[in-house]
Length: 479
Image 1 (tube, helix red, strand yellow):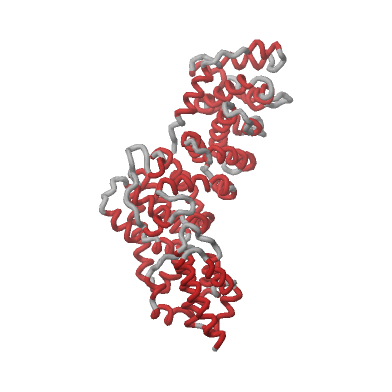
Image 2 (cartoon, one colour):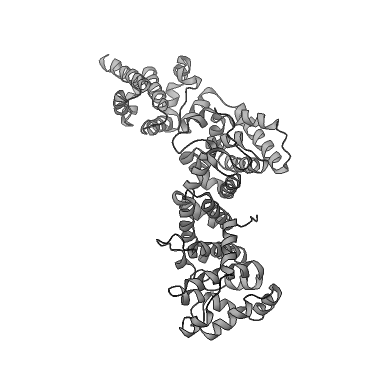
């Protein structure tokens, strides 16, 4: 999928192309050779067709100019420490050549070390005006993308370079400047073409993915922790004008972020559970679907959900049910989508969830809520009949997985959503009341200690529910 280059990059490149370069001065200083200058001038400021003919007549020579070889350093290695203006100019020229001359691009990709001259140039310095790292990432991401196509079997060189590129782009993605964020996201998208590139992206997800999720949370009207509105399904449309959505996130940036995560979702088995455990991706995407201003964003949201749910049905179908995705899909059908891919994904998702919900029990719904990692006052929590019928099963099912998850949930502070702690204490009280002989199991998980700590919490509801839980423990202790 081809994306238009960011306008800032285009403007910067045009500015650099127009700058005069003292090439002869570089030769006199011994920075570059006469042979280097001759090659550069043969393709600089000439018609595209003439440039193409010149390079195709000596592909190996121009590969050596740009990447080095036969005992000679590349033009970038020669000029890096002395002539930043030449480095910038050659980076822009190299980008033009990658786009226009496939034979050269193939020759560069097949070089023994195609990325080595560029990787040191990614290192940032204290000069924020230095354009070299940004220009380098633009060339490097394009070259890596081409290399992935030319040599799909051997990705060793690409795998060595990608982590360094990802680290640099993550700096841009963390910026408060939406322009820099969009540059990073577009370059991520350019290289996420193979299984290996997606695996490496996932390995570095604290750097690469977390800033993108923050952008999506802003678009959905929620910060990293303040997600109670998303979980309740409350909140109307937060669209403002045609170019932005919630949090001032531009529609173009939103689309590009969704595109990257859609590409990542093709490794659904690898990333699905992690995305939901670490970022509540299902709840987040349901909220974004509610707010989606364009069919192209809706298409990416539906396709990503389809990839994730079909790859991880046992864990993510319950999470999707808890997030009320089935009911929202019914609403979405009334929008009469015109995009064929979106229609197909909507139909497939609806069918999958309908089959799943046919077999759902109240216990399944409760288990899905707990496994989602976030609790709300859904009907089972306050139902004495539910606890009488299911308390023992909750403790024993899947080797006690649900109480372990409850312990994990209660172990967090939930500073922005204290009701989670209150609900958790309510559930512990009900388990102790209905199956008192299993108190030791809960104590081993640290739950007795934790609910006693929560008696001192600043939130009144948490203090009340924790007191009730401790009271159940004491009742059986004295009996």
